[in-house]
Amino acid sequence: MSNLPPADVIDPFAGTPAAPPPPAAPPAPREVRWPHLAWDGVLVAALAATVAVLWTTGNRALPGSPDLAAATLLGFLPYLLTGMSVAVSLRAGVPNLAAAGTVFLSATAYAVVLPEAGTTIAVLAAAGVAVAATLLIAGCVTLLRVPAWAACLGTGAAAVTGAAWWRPEAVSGLGGGWAWGPVESWTAVGAAVALSLLGGVAMSFTSARVRLRRAARVAAAERGTGGAGTLWTVVLVSQLLAAAAGVMVFAPEAPVLQPGFGAYTTLTFLAFGMTLLGGTGLYGARGGFVGTVTAGVLILGVARHLPEFAEIVPAVALLVGIPVARLVGGPAPAAAAVPDVPEPATTTVPLPVVPVQPVAPPAEPPPVDTAETLPVRPAPAAPFDADTRLQQYWPTEPVPQPTEPPPPPAPVTPVEADRTGTPFYRPPAD
Image (cartoon, rainbow, N blue to C red):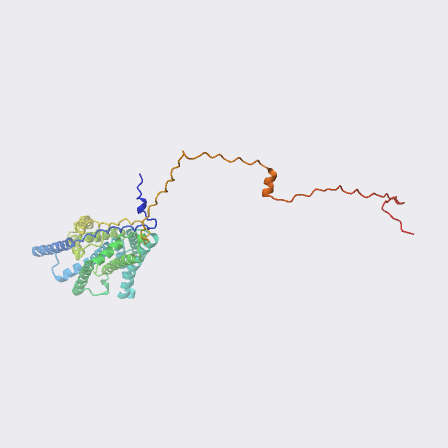
């Protein structure tokens, strides 16, 4: 049987009905912020407990005065800035594997330019290294269509190679061109902590996290102008922090820099270990306020006061930081469900439906009484006459026939031939 509606309800002038609207996407789950705050509290409490234990036991590992404590923290500052550089890049979902390389190359540029041009030009040279590294990463991602982490890794390797080639020997601490007393040391450490707090407060806003998460999720080949601008701004900030770490390498008065891939690997492990142990999420946009700085001080304190374990501290910090970041930062955010978009339907204005009037069947002819009807014999056909038929369709006048015989022809008089033998020649008359 047919599934078509009956004929009296079909409207041949009605348009295609509009498609129903797509189902609305479910709202994104609300982010939970308390694990990061709780972990920051745990790290601060652990640091305070460690300092209290060392102070009460009179351990020589603890600096005996605020001045010595400031000097110790000033030596930690380059590593803390490197960890903050990695933390900023992880917030955007682009792990800055070039941070350690930027530290070495900016420190080398600062050391080479400082004796000849002064502190200001040397700082600008270090910042120029950070800008050049950012442009190189952005160029690789935009032109070559490679992942950002691969571009960062290549840039870091190039920076370490350039630093080792530019000044292969160990560089002694130059004092940075400033007098690093206790006040300056505490100011520098306080500025680093304030910078970490400022970044945590900025990332506490939902709009900032959503913008960074969107920039992190979009593929390199599909990044638009807004997403690319946000991403490269974050990478530039990360590289500037690494350059600041390179400048702060020369704050102590000791040889602290030996460019090479061994130092690059150690510093990279240490920076990522501090960042992950500080609670920064593995999937971007999540993190605490002072977790990186606090975890960095704890890790560096262990490495300083337990020198027999100093070589394995970066690797242990990284291995412990991965599960911590997973537990504190949470799983990967679920991708928003994208409803199936139906094909565009033709929308027309429906005309008024005019009911179709049923058509009555034709009436049957009256019955014929065969008893009163006489048989009719057809008339005989006329005989076929060809002339009559031709005259009917092509009428012509009759041709007149001659009544008298034609007259006889005139007699022919023979002509004698002349002397030339020509019968039609006539001699001239005499």
